[in-house]
Every structure is written in C-alpha cells, then in structure tokens.
Amino acid sequence: MSVSTPGLARPGVGDRPAGLRTLQERISPASALAAVLVFALAVRLLFAATTGLGNDESYTVVTSRIPALSYFDHPPMAWWLAHYSAVLFGSEAPLAVRAPFLLLSTLSTLLMYLLTARLFGRWAGVWAALLMACAPVLGLTSATWVLPDGPLIAFLLAGTLVVAHVLFDERAHPALWLLAGAFGGLALLSKYHGVFLFAGTFLFLLLCPRQRKWLGTVWPYAGGVVALVLFLPVIAWNVGNGFASLAFQSARASAAGFHPLMALMVVGGIALFLTPWIWVGLVAAAVRALRARPINPRALLLICLAAGPVLVFPVVAAWSGAKPFFHWAAPGYLMLFPLLGRATARRWAANGAIRGWTVWSAGFTAAGVAVIATVSLVPSLGTAFSATGGDPLRELATWSDLDAAIRRQGLTPGPYAFVVTPVWHMGGKVGYALGPSWPVACMGDDCRGFLMSDIQHGRKGADAMLVLDAAGSNAQMNAMRRRFQSVESLGTVEIRHAGTAVALVVLAKGHGYLGDASPR
Image (cartoon, rainbow, N blue to C red; front, top):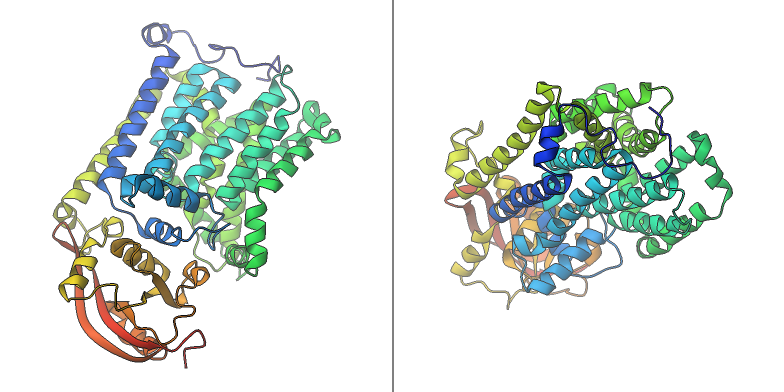
C-alpha cells in the first residue's frame, strides 16, 4: 500500500478498477467534478436564499459593523468578510453577507478534489468532493452561514494541498513551505482551529522517517513565521483587550470533573452532523489506512492532520463543564475525506452497496435542503410536525416584524441614543432586524462581543430603547431599572415569520442611562 514514488499520483492509479471503465468512458473526472460543483452550489444557494440569518450569523453581522483587528469570540476573518461584503453590496440581506462564504465553499469543494487527486487520483478526488458536499456540517452549514468555519475549511485545505505538494513531489521548491505557512496563517485568522494544521504537519514529520529531514531545515520554521506575522492582528487585539478572546475560548476547556459520557456525546453529535453513514465511512477508511503495512505516507499525513480535532475535543468535553459543540471536531474529519474518496473510487464498480450509499448521500442532502427551504417559506408546514407546535426553523427567521412594530408605535431612532438587549444572541437578532441606524448595546450576564463594542460608553443621561425577552422580562426589567433613572414599559410585540410566531419580546423606554458604573 505504500507509495512507490514521492511524485504526483498518476490519474487512474487506484481509482480505475475493472468494471468502472464504462462510467469513465462516458464521464471524465473533469465533467464529474463540474457536476459536483454545480450540484453543491445549487443546493447551497437554495439554502442561503430561503433561510434567514441564525443567531450566530445575526450576531456576527451586527458586531462586524464596527471594524476591528479581531473579535471576542473568534479571530476576525468571518467578521471582515461579512462587513466588507455588506459594504460592497450596500445591503445586509442574507445572500449579500453570505456571498463570500458561498464562494469560499465552492473553492473548498475544488480544493478537496485537487488535494485528493494529488494524493490518490482524479476519481478519488471526485468522490471526496461529492461526499464532503453531502456532509451537512461541512457542505451545507459551514459552506453557507456567516461563521468562521467556512474560511477555516478553505484555508486548511489550501494549506494541506501545498504541504502535500512539497512533501510528495521531489520537484517542489522548498520555498513552498512559506506558502503553506501563509495559508495556515489565514486559517488562524479564521478560527483558532488553524493551529491543528501546524500540529498535524509536525506530527507527520516526526512519524515519517523519509520526511523527518525537513525538521533539520529552516523551511518549515520559516513557514511558521509567515503564519505568525499574519496572525499578529489577533495577538495585538488580545493584548489590547486583556486577552478576552483567548480567555473566553480557554474557559470552555477548564476542568470541572470527569464525565466520559460527554465524550461519547461529542462523537455521536459529530456523527449526526456528518450523517451517520458518512461518519462510518470516514472512520472505516481511517482504520483501514492505519492497519495497512506499511502505512501509506500520504494516508498518514491525513490521519495526523485529522487526529488533533478528532481526539482533542471529545477529551475536552469529558473534563469540561462547558456545553460541548459537536462541530468543533469537524475540521479533523475533513481531512479523512480523501481516504473515503479513495475507498469509494476503488469499490464503486464492483460494489452495489457503495453505489447506493453514494447516491443516497447526495439525495439525502438535496432532499433535506428542499424540505428546509419549503418549511422556511411556509412555516405552518413545519409546525404541523413539530413536537412543540412552533416553527422548527424559528432560529433562522429574521425578526423583520420588530422594526415595523416599533415604528407602528411612533418610535424612531432619533430620540434614542441606542437599543439595549439582555443577551448576545438577542442583540444579534434585534440589531440585524433594526439595521445599522440603531446602535445596539447588551447589558446582561452574557454579552460576549457586544462588551467590546462598548456602544453605551459616553452616553450617560441618554434614553434607550429596551428590547427584552418576554419569558424573563420581570428579572430583565428589574436589571434595567438599576441602569436607568426610570424604565417605562411599552407593551409586548409578537415577532412573526410568514404568519407564524417565532418570538415574543417586551419593549420599554429606558430614561436617563446612569453610565458605565451602573448597575447601582
């Protein structure tokens, strides 16, 4: 199974088994790739065009209105893309702010093909690209939503492609390590997960005797310096803000006892996010590669890159008291798709189950998006099957009714210095619905990036519009009374999406903000 030559994998080697000739004669890998790219983009466009911004997206768009070197939750790439896309299009409409993420997802699909084709052949690349597009967490949500994961995936794949080129092509110039470092730096500018590109590459150089020579040269370290230079905005922002972002993220991994079931929950959660049948295929392909003797160095590189996220986050969940997020491990599984593509290409012709599994994966994703689009446009269809009787996609609903409700009461931004919400995700929804003309502040226990924007600073004595969650309005109203000279309730507003209620909020006037030293 080991590679006989360190050069580029020859097209057709390991990806043209007997019996597949009729398919390859009818469809070239290039044509198949074009079909995959069109399929993936069409599905993503349908999803992006028919759904509003979720909590995280709304929050990202609203906090991105104030450009900064970095941001509280993550490094700045997603915020920069959202901000400048809105400026370019003159709009914060979902398709406008999602546009760069859609473009990056198309690039990621192409990069998955190029990486896998370089390592294992062109048909393996086609299947890897298709299956990645069919995995919801990688091919749909991260590929569409205004989140750090989209650019992270693109730059991780670009960096891995360059690393594979410099390692397995003897004609490659060592200076390509600098380009790999640049892509790694861009990955770090997207999300702190970018560090796994460097950790995985270093682990591979340690484990692969033939490639260990690179550790004695300056080139990998020079690539690391390039990445560090690109990462400087994040370092500078953290230094200037008391390392708030690093503290926020590291607190999620703080020890709070040992709970092994949480590790299993993370593994099960990412399996659902990838779809269980794709997850099983990824794990099986990785196990098969590890059991081969000798181990294929190309497969070993991918496994080393995958190992960090795949292993670290379940372990963190086992000892941390913080809520686990299943998608954190997704960048690790991303690196196993070339192995799955290779396995699929080898078995496609002779194994009907593989063919059915692949077609099912594509059909499931397309059908799932069609259902989501339909329910988003006609929420009453979703409420009929919802256990709670509410809109199952209410988090993706835009609170466009809020602005109209406020104006129906004769309220405009003019008399109010800013809008106040009690929690970060509500601040995102409210701020996005009202638009940039209403500065949004957050006053509560969990405000995240709104604390950094400091909208309320210097507005002592000003009046504010308060938008509170009806479910906890009494406690929130009492908290606001400690921040303003007086608070006047204006009533309740039901936020509706396509005729279906998605939220209930309480409006109030806050008279005379007491200043940054409050609450009293």
